[in-house]
View 1 (cartoon, rainbow, N blue to C red):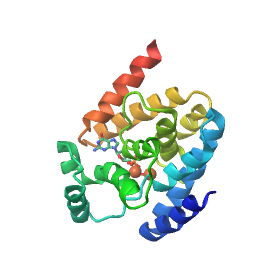
View 2 (cartoon, rainbow, N blue to C red):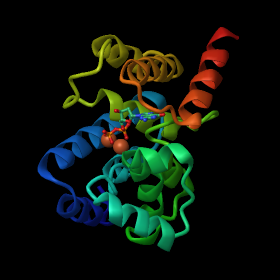
View 3 (cartoon, rainbow, N blue to C red):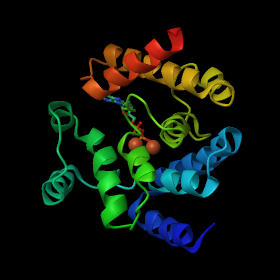
View 4 (cartoon, helix red, strand yellow):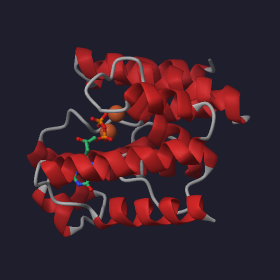
Length: 192
Ligand code: DGI
Ligand code: FE
Ligand code: FE
């Protein structure tokens, strides 16, 4: 672990509650494991995992205020479901507060909840690690997706998006257009 990573790990421990910090470590180590499998730099995967939920424990009022301060643009779904904001805002805080200059890490944080069409390997690794880390237990098909992640990452991403959209529909939740676009993109890619 570099000095930068070590110092960010300490800061993250302070801004997250206990459970969220445990989840964060789970994502960081799972991302590092996927990075080993897919030939991505471990350090960057671990750091992106550490930072992915850095804005998660900020109260909603403060989230909106910080988005105004840093000119983070929100769509209608994010305004109605403010828990989604932590992804975009987290990406901005990674740059402004944690000094991350690596755009791919910033984007991995930004798109970790909805994904986006044409994700880089690192982005797909964070998106997937967030869903499969060992502390997660409530999603359906989790064992299958965990195995699939180490066999075919695009197939795992597609299945995660499919199950997430299904889950959101059964719960009558608003779908962020980006989540739908990402699913359509990866479902299309899989058929080719
Ligand atoms: O922050 P975490 O809990 O670790 O994980 P996350 O950032 O992936 O957020 C997970 C939640 O986000 C999960 O309950 C599904 C939800 N989600 C993903 N896409 C959408 C969404 N919620 C809404 N309303 N709309 C979406 O498009
Ligand atoms: Fe998150
Ligand atoms: Fe997370």
